[in-house]
Amino acid sequence: MITGSRNTNKLTFLTGIIASLFFILSTGSDCIYAQQNTDDSPYKDFNLILIAINNVGAQNMSLYGYHRKTTPGLDEWAQNALVFENTYTPVSWTLPVITTVFTSLNPYTHKVMDRYLENTLSPDIKILPQIFQANNYATAAFTGGLDNNKIFGHMQGFTTIGNNPSFTHFTVTLKQAKRWLSKNLKRKFFLFIHGYDAHPPFKPPRRFRGVFSNPKGRKISINPAFTYRGFRSTDGQYWAKCIETQDPLNPNEGNKQKDKITILKSVLLTQADIDYLHDLYDETILSIDSQVKRFLDSLEQDLLKKTIVIVFSEHGEMFAKHGRFGRVGTIRGTLYDEAVHVPLMIKLPGQGSRRITGLVQLIDLMPTIMEMLDIPIPCKVQGKSIMPLINRNQPINDYIYSGATYNFMGGFNRLFFMYPTLNESIRDFDWKLIHEIVFSADTYGSLSDNYKLKTKEETFELYDLKNDPNELKNVTNEYPEKTKELTDRLNQWSKGCRIFNPYNASTKKIPEGMVKDAQEHGYW
Image (cartoon, rainbow, N blue to C red; front, side, top):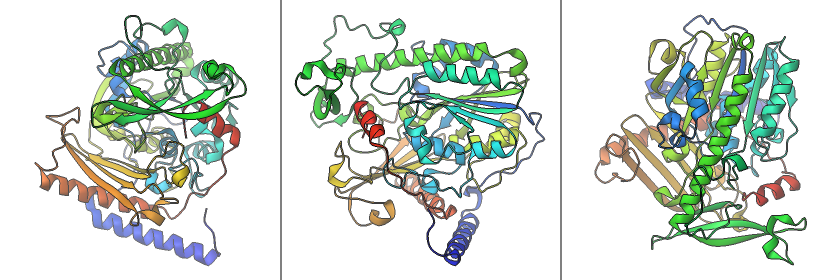
């Protein structure tokens, strides 16, 4: 939130503009700004349905070559859609990602990177639903709550928002969307749908259990009803932290009791445990696929002739690869491809199916949507329209960037005792660099307060993607010049992001009920 006198606000704003112009001029072809519209759009006044299949990475979808048939419905639906094979998310958790999608600003720029501190988007930043609303669209959002709660400021502009509790699934949100559609078919509309079905703990519906996860004959030592976050110790064992909710008088009763306490446990995960949790996760994807496909098939053909449908995911999940379990873990954020390589499918009326290999970022969605619908963008954005990539196979991004801070709130009182970190990366088709800074555990406050003061550890990882697509061998020592080149580009990008936008996020207190619900699901 901007504070101080009006003159101070003007000075801050002008300073930000001057700094941004200097950055653009100094970075040449690598500057981050919205690409101007270059083609007349045949989709003016069309509707938009935007579906977020939360926590589903591209690498776990049969649509993207996964060995299990986890997305047979979307495999079929995408036969008449554009499938983007190289789409990447800016960070590995939902709140900053959806804020990026709706603002076309990187997390470093919109500054919403924490649920507790600086958690609310500045009202001075225009967001996608507000732009739709200003252009006479009916706007509605039916989501799983939590990181899509309107308290965070990034849901402004939705006239209708489903009042759903945290972690609501598609079984609820798709039905809500269907009912809303039936009452708004005569208006042009923007509809956002989201569900937490694939979030841990992994609980696939009964009809999908056992498709991949039959526990018979396997030595499963953990309770899959809880969420596990962790990393591999030096002896090769996987230690994880687990939040359990129990009846204090009868711990074996677990979640069945109304009066519960939350406890934090250290758990040793065997490979059988990890494989079993991965199997359950794949079954939740199968369930999502079935529900989303059924919803898409239910849409009337007359409606589809005037509607653009986009399906994507905010991030994927980790299963002990790279020595980390869970995409956040007890140490830091995760920018390996399991977490940041995400699906993106766009069905345009009159367009056929095609696989598109160009590099795409989720930050590009907003300017792409605006160009498709021939709606001017009334604000500065950092993403680029991918319409030239769609229409002419013209590359849009030479590099893909990700970056955010983690766990800067709480000090020694953090539930998982997570160290605050900075986690960022840059990639092209051939190389990927991951840069991480781990700060001391007593760090408390914002990045600007602590960035240079309490550094505990700084690491760089360089991967030769042509020869090592699974990111298994860090080759920073073998290629110091490439490491320096990408590090310089990444530093240039991150500095540019911080000066691009003069507005700061504000802090709002999270309701206690929301915190308790999140803890019972293994969060915070």
